[in-house]
Image 1 (cartoon, rainbow, N blue to C red):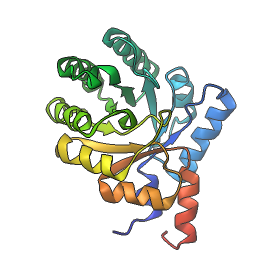
Image 2: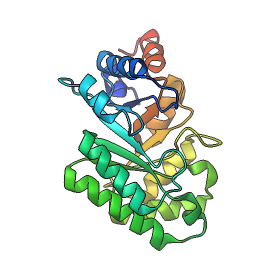
Image 3: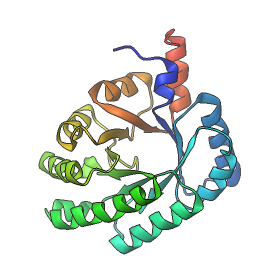
Length: 227
């Protein structure tokens, strides 16, 4: 399939999740997102209100990464972080599920966590995304989590934080798309640094891309005459 720059830019969550990010870094992130027409900025929860202010009057959404990057906090803690991010103005959140519980096949826990957090998003009309961190998972784990998502219906399931041992793969995107169901979209993240990789993820079924290389991807598309 062929895609335009505008179409692809509108799939990009422009990302800065670094511990050392400053106010000026966030201002730059937001300015770039507006300039290039990216879908959102993806940030930790602390700068949510700051970035919401920088983005005022634009169509760019303010995202928030919850229990990031490990997911090893309680459901109550995750719920409190989501609620606080919503209070501060986030319009989307990406939370890391409890990978250890998934590996233990404690699916009741994974479902309870997902239900609690997705419900908070629904109540506030805020988009919810569930990060699997696929680099640590077996195929059966990815399928199990995707099947739970097909029941709970978060807005998105997402491959990776970008802080694990590996990022998104085409195979994992396809697997998540197959088992999460028609009502749940897939976000590919981690290691997406070129148009070639981005296109492969989109072709596999991803409708959102988490990347700090969105500008590079757009520039590569323009160089290839894909305006």
